[in-house]
Structures are given as structure tokens and as C-alpha cells.
Length: 195
Image (tube, rainbow, N blue to C red; front, side, top):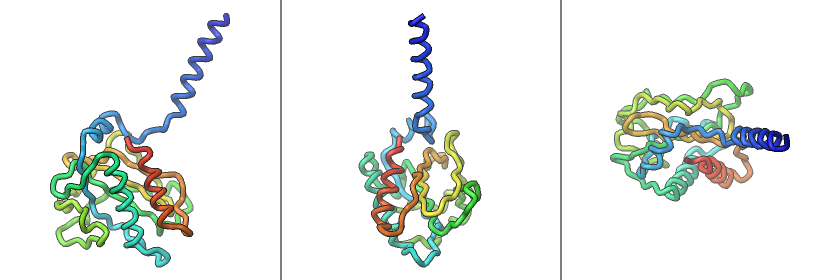
């Protein structure tokens, strides 16, 4: 009888531990692809921060620099002509939405065209043929996320298939007092979930 109780306890403990997992936002196939890749570049975004309390260019500079540091530590190098992975950043500083399920993050590139204004923070990091990316699909485990004020969402997209392989965000809200440090910490927190 003791063995049966011990066996049941072990099964329940194992099931509990599995349910407490990180809830990864990536499929096994996508994780394998990301591990094989070693170059990246950025898709420019049109998520400019309109709120005058924020310096749009400086915030994006800090985000890009922090992503670059994290990608470099993961073994990636910038390649603007034929990158394996495209990085797309959603900055959400203007949104003041009470309903957490309103306006989920969509990745839509229909505005891409040659001559699109690209902020100076992307100058050295933009995919040369960004305007050819018109439609993006998501891998099976990539979820739409509700907009959340003072947050950042980072998408990693397979350049060959235009499929989002991984989407990262953090639960914290970015503070205003030490904005640059909080942004760096926030992006670093996102990359803790990197496959």
C-alpha cells in the first residue's frame, strides 16, 4: 500500500512540475531552426512613440542596442543582405487601453515600400530588402498578445518563409524614473526566454 501511495504521489508531483513549466512560445521545430541560424537583421517598424513625454529615437536606440547585445551573446551576427532571422520590434508606449484583450499585436507589413522613412536607430541594422516582406504568418505556438502600455514585443521571423518563429515579451511594466535602465532590463528579461 505504501508503494502505491508513493507511486501516486510521484506521478502527481511530476504532473505538477510539468504544468509549472515556462509555457514556451515556440514549437520544437522553430526552436531547432533558431538554433541553426546565426545571422539577423531588422525589419523597420512604424511604431513611433507619439507621446511627447518620451524621446522616440532614444528609446529605440536603447532597445536596438540591447537586442544587439543579447543576439551577439547568443552567437548571432548582423547581416543586412541575407540574414537568417529578421527582428521586428513592437514598442507600445502610447497605448492607454484598459481592456487587456483589446488590440492584439499584429504583424502587418503592407506599408513597406522603397523609400519608407526609417528612423536613424535602424540605420546600420535594416534588412536591405525589407520592402519585399509583405505578409507574415506565425508558427503554431506563437500567440497574439494584447497591447499593454509601456511594454515591448520582439518577433523573430524566418527570412525565407516569412514565419514568426518566436515572440517574446515580459510581464513587467517599464518605469519612467530610470527609463533607459528599465528598457535594458525589460529586453534582457525577454531574452531569458530565448530558446
